[in-house]
Length: 145
Image (tube, rainbow, N blue to C red; front, side):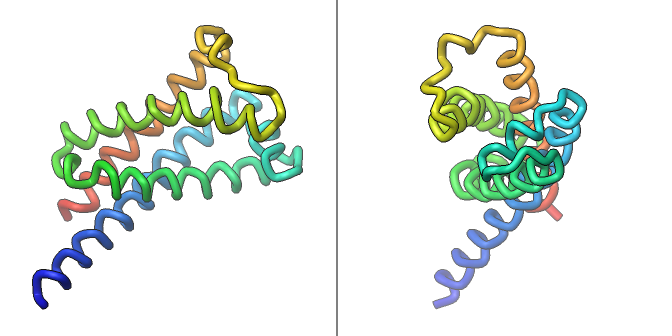
């Protein structure tokens, strides 16, 4: 019975660590998006154009993506180097999933793979990599403390 409790406790720590990391990464990425005027577009996902709504939606998404980071990569990300590496990988994955697939489909625009090498999409890639890096590092800090 102790093994089941330990396993549940470990998974809870990974999920909470992922949420904490995702919120930290989302805060940094959200500030970058605010400076680039991107938050109203994010707000469009929930039927608004207000930057504050976009920031709130972005933070909810960031926390959820962080939780999934903890679940999928938590066992591999217990050190800072590992957290940084897997965070960068996960940020790149979400750059493909988010602005190239999910978001444009939700907004009726179709897949955006053709625009992947455009200036705005490369800036988005940098933002997602920064998000992933911060998420992975904060996750590693959280689970090690």
